[in-house]
Length: 225
Image (cartoon, rainbow, N blue to C red; front, side, top):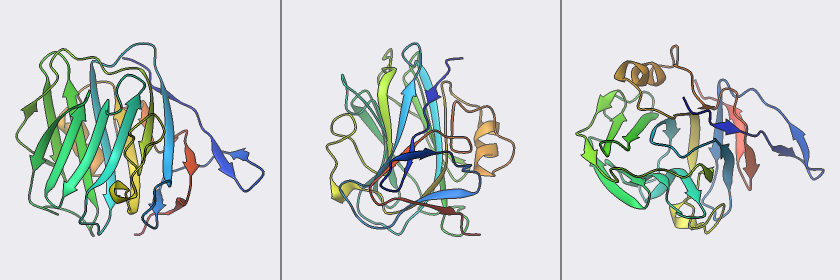
């Protein structure tokens, strides 16, 4: 299994001091539309990705388009992009090519939160998406592609260049938590575990012990119960 390493850089106050925070039971809050508010995760692994699964939970009342997970490299600004086009429609981009999934909005959701998992494997090009435990019809893209291992993950904005090129009208406004990423296509049982907040499989990118950097107006607060 490829080890995806992230470095913790939480800057506090004007001094730029670095602090560590346990993110269990916490959420990143993006309070308002912005062209700069985001969370940075720097991924460092020893070879390109042939497979991945990304899972996260989010809570928003937006109806316009917005980005949930953006991974960019110098070679490709949309190595991995999970993007909410409109209510009931999510797109997954791999290596600049995308597919669109449609689903009943808020089906099976709890108190407004939605849980999403997206998987892709290079050998077959098959992309899978689950929304609130429910698998959607599988689609295909970028068969044989390798995702660069030299890039940057950004939460809350879509990258048009590595770490930048943001558009306020594509920014996320709401709450984001339980971000996990694996370098393989996980089994449905693992997706259900992630959705139910029960025992998770080992995650190489996990917000429970995440290394991250907050930029702009993003606040870390306990989850609403």
